[in-house]
Length: 240
Image 1 (cartoon, rainbow, N blue to C red):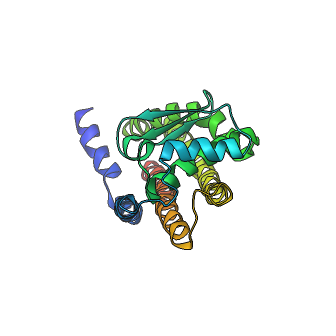
Image 2 (tube, helix red, strand yellow):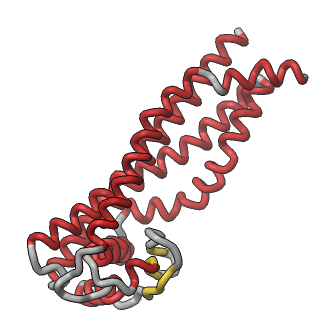
């Protein structure tokens, strides 16, 4: 059994790992871009002088959505909307800051709240499959590797199927995030939070930079799934 283990592990750590490099580079690019863009426009004050929290309240109120609670949350870029509890949480640098970055991020999360109110189908689907995907993403790789070590095809395929849920989730996330950003810009303009072309340009830059992180996650997930399939096919040929 010991010899078998050391014979099979290199099969997982083989040249197919090269497939992951483009996704890793894209993820690093996306993270550096979003941090740099956020930092740049966090130093640009918004003429309306509204903080992120005030922005979210105004644009949601003007859009006829009064049920969402707005709360601060610790950390940087930890902003998120919880559709189940109808709570919009804004990070420390967004909640009480009146900058282009703050209002852009706050409006994006408010866009998710409007998706919930409007029964936006992709958001509903993402919320529905989220718990299953979290379990699948945790179990997929251990199950897949055990299947490789034991040369047991059902476990290998089970690992691939579970990981494919992560890919589906990443792909569903793309239209959800793009639509939230589109709603954000429109709401900021309609509510008078953004009053100049330069401010709107800055908001769009922040939101576009953030969008790259979701694109990178989707690309990385697809490449990892392709790698698992290639590993499974390689193991099958060796066992024939």
